[in-house]
Image 1 (cartoon, helix red, strand yellow):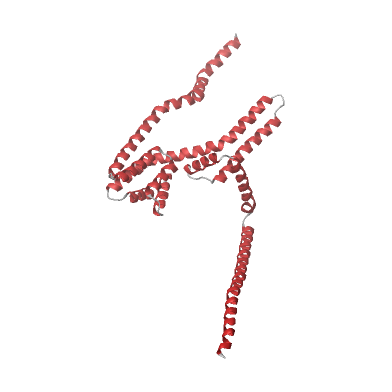
Image 2 (tube, one colour):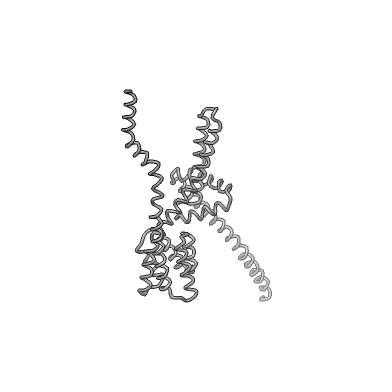
Length: 307
């Protein structure tokens, strides 16, 4: 009797195992398909709701402008785009790369369009003048965004150069008082304002997130591209590698920066008379001549008229 039940038990065990394996797979596949459908449906519904809630600018104009930016980015060389990205980073990231490409395209085509309208409006006998007019406006539209970005970079670097000697004095004082370099930099970022304080705060955040301090400081130097700051960072890195005291290095760097600030002030004072010469010759001297010689010219004209 027991031997007769053994095949039944074996068949039941094999059947149960078969059903368990393939039945579970079918249930998991059906369940996964249902979950995937639910996720897709939820995502689509959320995207539709977000698209309906967004304004017309974000739903239509911004994607259109982004597509135009991608089209122009594909035309421009990769080296030029990389250089623009570096310049935007040095300028403090006033806009993204796609926004700058859109600004570049709008500037170029708007000025070229104005030149084209003037080309059509001017008489036909001035063909050379019209072509020169279109060429000048096209070059201006192409160069204006680059000049604007270069001006932003220069203005930011001037702010950093102006704030750097005082920041160095504060860092030196804090280190000589017993604080570490990171704490001294944090104190400078806390007590000062401007792009230098912002970039120091960013460097400290990168260092706190696990990046090596020398790498974070080197990235700081690359973002600002100021000669004095680069020299200071290189000196700090070399002092850490050679085991030299940081306070001594900071004192030397602080003295050098104060000397450079005095030299820049003296150079600006020597350049002031030369810079004043052009407005004097072009605007002030003609006015003086008009005021001084005007009455004499009127009297000479009246005397000649009477004779």
